[in-house]
Image 1 (tube, rainbow, N blue to C red):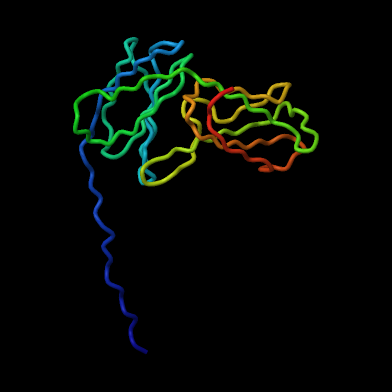
Image 2 (image 1 turned 60 degrees about the vertical axis):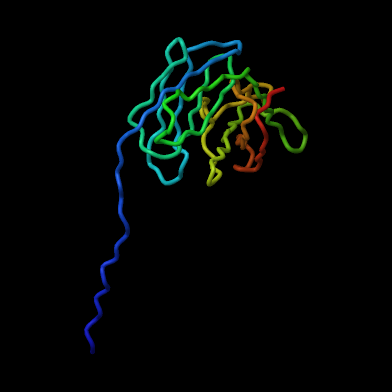
Length: 193
């Protein structure tokens, strides 16, 4: 019997670590709410394990985001009484100018959960809201940035989501006692009534 051949060692590639980057953000508003605004920095790639960053602007709407790895990032801004706005940022940036985000008017969204047969409202149903995030290379579904992703319907079977910018694509699913899990899904834009 011939000795087993030992496989050659494989090179899997190189991992390169780069310096941290940063950029300034300037949030403006003409909506009913005001500043400061909350900022979320979300990785815009599926190949990163970088965490989401949450911070606030100062009263003038200014903030500096530092210590961020190179790559694509989604900056989301929101403030009470205003809609959300977002911008895709690639680091390192060529410009030293701040990323400017203007908060739009809020577009609330009312969602009703009903029985499929008699259309009666279902109180106490858990509504899961996921947002479709579109990045240049892929489409992802993630929790609704800047708002809880799970909501419970009121006595009329209604959930109201405040602070949407009006352009979000949302995926909805509901669960309620006495109904099979995952029995209803819906998709739509976040423009309110």
